[in-house]
Figure (spheres, rainbow, N blue to C red):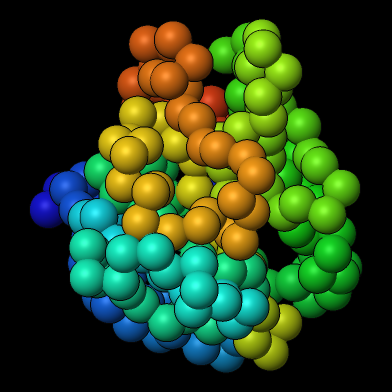
Length: 217
């Protein structure tokens, strides 16, 4: 498992290659969040991928778990309902001390959405919010609205964890085992599904580049 790390003042960027077990990532985040709160570690933006799995947020409805035996299912303390993680999806766990960013969770979620929207705009993808639907959406030429990125946030002692997942080129059929985010009337898409040959490295570089527009330096 190769990884690269770099620190900009109080913010660290961590890029991990390979598939990271969900349980291992949760243990790492729990520890890092405690250290950030204690002032013994820098804030962290962590880029990774998981093997195929489903996660259940605090609002998950068991009826939305269509295929409970297909992939491992993890209960998690983040907000939201069921979502999928897997290869080809860029997961970014964002661990920030929100006492330095306004102590406003709604604003923070809005900022995460805008971070994705601004990033996708650089790839000529028009992505938008939808009232009543967390996440980031695109509209296909035939009018279908499909989700391209999900957001799930947890805050402990004003330190955030969990974060975003952006579909670069995952196996979209894997979503059929759940009702993603409890929304059955709309599908999911990816950059690859939209016909874009964008690599994970391209996405990572653009997310890092667009960070300062939303969260400052």
